[in-house]
Length: 264
Image 1 (spheres, helix red, strand yellow):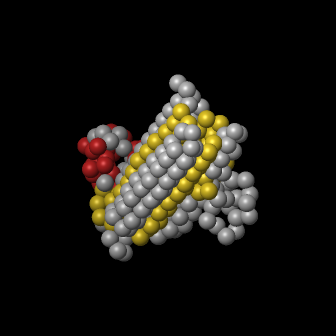
Image 2: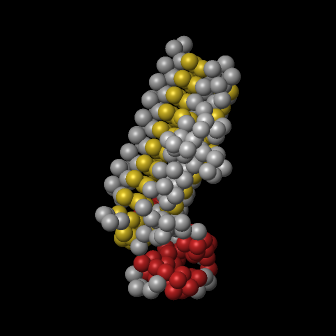
Image 3: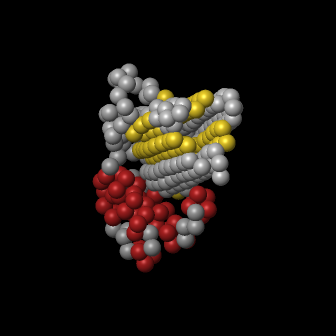
């Protein structure tokens, strides 16, 4: 399938566009941009910097991808933005390149649903199958696990980690790490429950969910210190025939690597 570039678009001759790429009216594509097969770029979108985009993405009008980071320490070093496959990136989203404070790359995975006005700052790592609702803002160095959902108008502080399958409610102020599988909301932010709807939609068995609910009870409802709770979470391995051992280990690894304390 041939590329389809609107005559009003400005595409630098050095940009690399695979077969089937569609570039809409008045879009601007910079010289260090690579776009994979089947990706569609809407009108007036700007893609610049050292930006690599995978296959079959849908980038809507007025998105800005690959601009330099909003970091006063950045001095124009050659950093990058890498986006995977089959993402939906809606209107007015802004994704920045990385900084040399980490590996110099902002990374967005695959199969993400990213709504209008979402900001993904420098050095963010966004996993796969996430949902970011309108105006969600991820500050620098934020990590978001696979299948996480972040509600509209939510702000996530620098260096915060949000675990896999977690859900952050509308207008959250996220200044601490959010454990995998949990739903958090409110002001101040607190863990409300296990993300049961999300886990059921993803095919978690009743046995796996039962163990995750025990994890929730131990860490967030038992009154134990975090150290005491994690020792008991470790002891859950083997429960329900071991079907949730991987989930237990996910929580153990997440808490061990928590950088800003845990929302409880």
